[in-house]
Image (cartoon, rainbow, N blue to C red; front, top):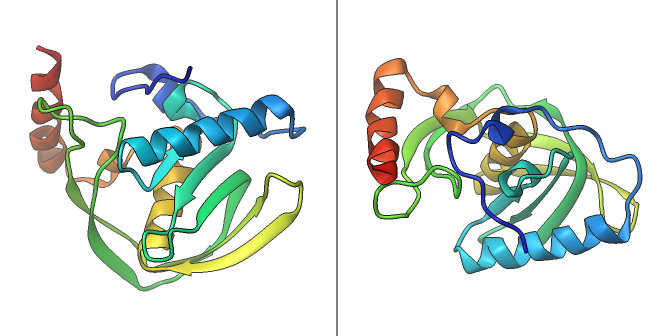
Amino acid sequence: MLQMKLCGDLVLRTECAPVDKITPEILDVLDQMVDMMVAQNGVGLAAPQVGILSRFLVMMDPDTEIIYKMINPKILSRSTDTTNMEEGCLSVLGSDNLPVYAHVSRPSSVVVEWTDENGTVQTAQMSGVPARIVQHETDHLDGKLFIDYLSPVRREMLMRKVRRRKL
C-alpha cells in the first residue's frame, strides 16, 4: 500500500530518474495513485509523493474528469502570459490535515509530452487548470514544491501552518 510523503521528507526534494521500461509494477502503482488522488480529493499526484523516485504522475482535468497517467512527462513549451492562482498540495498539510494554499504565478498554458500506460507517446496543449496541475506535478519530479515560488515572507507564513501540524 502506498503512503503519502509529507513536506520535510527528503524524497520530495530529490530529482526523479526517467522510467526505462513500463512494467506491470509501474502500471499497478499508477492505478493505486489514481485511487489515492481521488480518495483525497486531489487533482494530481507524482511518484515522489508516494516515495518512488521515478518520473511518472497522475492527474485529472477537473472540468472533464479525464485522468492522465503520464510516464516521463516533459513540458516542451510554456506560454509567456502567466496566471496567478491558488495552489495546494497533498504533501503540504496544515494542522487540520488539509492542504495549505497560496497563490502562485505560472505560465497560463503549456505543451506537454509524455508516454501513456500503453507505451504511446502523447502530446497535448493544456491551458488553465490542467496546465497548472501538470506544471505542479512535473515540478515534483524535479524535487520542487509550489512553496518554492513564494516570497520568503509568504513561504514562512505558510510553513508556520505546516509546522503546527507536526507539534
